[in-house]
Amino acid sequence: MSGGDCNGAGRLSSRGAQLAAEEPSLYYRGLGFARENPYDARTRPDGVIQLGLADNKLSLDLISDRLQREMPVVDATSAYGEFHGDMPFRQAMAAFMSHALNLSQKSTQEHTEGRLSACDEEPFNRSQPLSIDPDSLVITSGATAAVGLLAHVLADAGDAFVVPTPYYPGFTVDLERQAGVTIIPAATYSDSGFDISTSSLEAALRESQGEGGDEQEEPRQGGGGAEDEGRAERSRGRGRRRKVRGVLLSSPSNPLGCTFSNTTLLNVLHFCRKNCLHLISDEIYAGSVYNGDGFTSLLRLAEPRDYPFLHIVYGPSKDLGIPGFRIGACYSLNPAVQSAITKLARFCSPSRHTQALLAPLLSDSLFAQAYLSENQCRLRKASSTAQEALLQIGVKCLPGSNAGVFLWCDFRQFISPKNSIRGEEDFFLRLLRQGGVNITPGGACGCCEPGWFRLCFAGSPKEELQLAIDRISRTLLQS
Image (cartoon, one colour):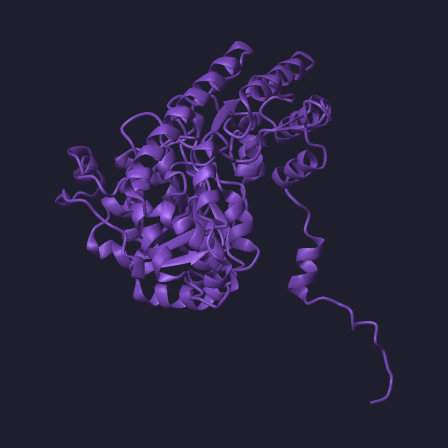
């Protein structure tokens, strides 16, 4: 073969070139800057304090000694296993999920309350405990992989999922990077506590059909002027038709740090049923509900006719504080979905060594109950401490914070220009580069009201968290 033009030999595919050229969002820019300039009280006291990473280091002492004692023998885990998770580990994960998702308890009246108002049908009453079937579990290398697999098998490239705002900032990458699935935001607002309404879901569905979305909604308190401009700036893809394949929900909410009422969850479930849409419920913070009446999984509320369309994502990364172990799970009772994601699991399966290490701990029912209870107690104290310290410097958090490792903080009065995306971004960068604190701007979460930020309180020691809030206070005084 003779020579010729070889200029294209080193070129990437179109999708590879797009990935290589992709600019990170403010969320990932903040994480990267903090990672490169980390705070250390002795060696780098002027470094960046990381409050933008959803990490839980409050309860590692409860599991570290046990994990070191139970280190598995290498010979037993060095061979190939099942790519979607070895059966002993799936059984262990199923047992732990039943505790974390609060399925092992009998349901109360509250679990079926609101069914008639939500669905105008006879209430479906499941009073007996539920359990996770290990045969319906697919184990992945983290919950991120589980969301990505589901997006890949439920939608085609160019299709869309409706995602209520504000949402976990990583969802954009989880859906778009491999599956090519677009987010259509269902807008929520502070005057309703960012609760999800059926009207917001319906508006997002209309938007996907090129019929417009929240511009048709009634004006909200505090709106108008610059705030409406901010909402318009953050809307995406208006007038462009996309096929919506489902709704992606984070429950408990990341970044709001709260649970949804059963009525809200039932409304979402009914919306999906009515429109023949899949529902992915990311319940990775289920075991980290530290106030209120506890957690209600959508599995608890779903009827048998919902099972083909309901898919649960979970992982112990947040509840146990072990994100580096890269363990996630997808639970679906749809045989076709199970088959499809099982075939793809070979690309994102965790090591057998990690599975063997965690299996005894996850399958220990007494441990699960004691650990979750103690961890929730520590989260409650840390959350209360952070909220009190923030209030002292004039920053209020979303009322009703009761879950997860973060608070949804209202900095709207401190950004300039007010109610503007530019003001939010300027404040974020000033706090990051000059103040030495990384928190997540609401714009990265699709929030329609500039000035809200997510602050993670469980990944830093108490003294370091207080120092971060002192730095935030100084930055506010300079605004």
